[in-house]
Length: 396
Picture (tube, rainbow, N blue to C red):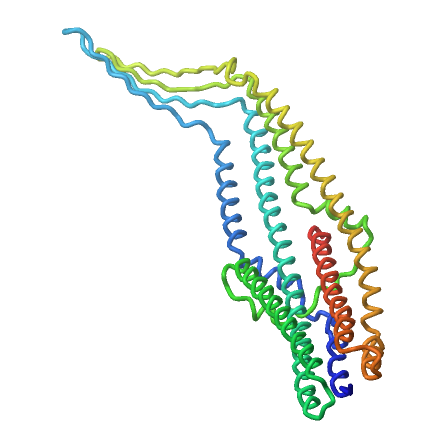
């Protein structure tokens, strides 16, 4: 069987991959652009601003009280009336501590917004990585289909000359059906990835933004300690829990100062049977019952928040270590794949064996499939590395 003109065409399928190309697009710039359009982040920022403004109203003075009294006397005695205004105050030190607590609570809310933003940025980055993967997968299977179509065209001419059997031609056609199915699946995956990014972009089409995104971000791996240190300093989850713990500690201080008495001062004017009376009043509020059991409850809450803060720190360090080990393992795999896939002798030797009649067309496709699967596995390893690197770098 002579199909010399077919084999070099098919060999290009597994040698023409662009998996190793460099990324020329600023990946983080695209993430920033999509994050700026994200409706969830916009709504979260507005909610945070409203909650911070609500906190600012918690340290105001109590509203002044105005009272008016009118009393009817017996006939011949006359009536009397009085009007007064009273302003209540807490102990002066309470306001300053409460203001510090409110600042801590506002900072916690801002950090909570930062947590949402960092989580959304990671989601966008992972969606972009998936988009690149799906693009590459479509290119891989489209190239396969194009090459098989070329083989079919050449084989049809070879069939007329008696150089190719109808059985071999049918095998190639069956391979085309399988290649077409794989391409359709890849196209569906690309459509889904594009739709996901559109939703993250606030429903706006971002194809122009991602058109030049053809490869995974080429992010170098830094020492493990640098990621752990960055997370300890910049991870908003850790900083958020720390801020909550500080706010709760200040709430305890506020409650303790609230045991000091409050006071009120008032002015009163009274009229009775032609006489006018003016007076001042001073009162004390004795917090005997209002703060009972509040401090023990707040102390328990503060201990719980401290534990959550430490737990979040340990969880972040554990995730970083896990992703770091995954990347090291994937880097080894990618180096091994790269060495083998860049060796063009694989397909040349397979083509030579087919031409020499040492393997059948069925064996040829079976063995060639190993190289196709290897490229698909290479792409999957690249995707996993990029996703792990995105998680690793989100706090930097």
